[in-house]
Length: 543
Image: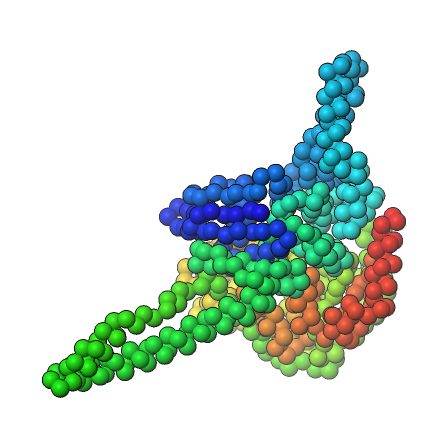
């Protein structure tokens, strides 16, 4: 068990948390939710001991081991992958290294033999002889295949590093597991594997995630950060949402009835307070009025942007024709003979583990890359707006937010442009902030403002939910659902894909395309795709 006792954290004069008391018990998985800036990651750092609170303390059941997902992707660059995973249990790693150092001595003494014996006993007690095989099993489950296990971390691509660090956190059956955005940069197979791992995990888990489907699947409880407090709910994310909305509705209805009663009493008192025959009744009503207290409705830290994509022109029947499209990069065929046609009602989700292929296809369709073979043709009525996975170049300038967005607007009126910024929660002085100093979430909201102001009838979005909080993801999800044009998008957010797409395309690891007009859940459940995913997983592990 791990508990926070009277935790307060002040940043300057602002209290991020105030007298937080909460217990996280064994056998439960807690989803820690809240708006961006509410303090989710900060609270995990306090629990893990990486950050000191202003007041209060964290207590852990004696003898229990806590593990957390490292956020520094370069910390272990000089270590081998397997060793990095085993470091998840620091004591085991240290014992192994110490006994190996003793055995490597040329002048092995009696004292060395006694110490080695002690270490061997402790090593065996921690299942040290299974450490490498356990670490390999975790890595393979997450899609880091055997060929990488002896590599140095610095030689791995970013998405593989993330998986290794996640395996490190999971290693050795920790008693308390803290995970901050564990599904970021994971492919479908890795997310599914992690879901099953956490469902079967019998100890304590506290997880921060913006993936609603993931939280619904793995969480037994929800810890909601709002108003500087943490409120605990029994149930997953959907249960929290329904419960919290019901509570707000009940408080509003109760306050409305109280306000009506207050008005009724005030009218009676005003009318009869000077009437001698009614004075006793007026006095009684004054006492009743004094006892009525309205429930405090504090403003939530959650802010929902207003996302509404309105095309300037209706799209025709001819949208996009792709024929025999192929692309090879550095000797590797990324796209292999892709052929498909889009209709005016298509909302296409590109899914699967081939991240590079999805991004490359979007870049080709936007004219940023050229195919080696094949052609593509957009219909004459189409207009396109693009959300790139890497938007660094977009914000590498000295423009203010308002000036940056104005350059993409046909109407240059400042009030008009600021209206779009306001929808995306950029208010007042925010408009004069320089775009190059914006946070990841703010840059995403800028890009979505750009897409809204463009009036395009085709939207292409490459992982748009990265860096967004739950409220912004929900707003974007709803905006795409009601968008009357065509959408091509890639996302790892299961619920986002399921509720938005009516057509699924998966570019397989060999660069070929599977194209199905179906929902995401139906696609995943199909026997054909289950077999394909199994075959490619086996191929990766064999390699």
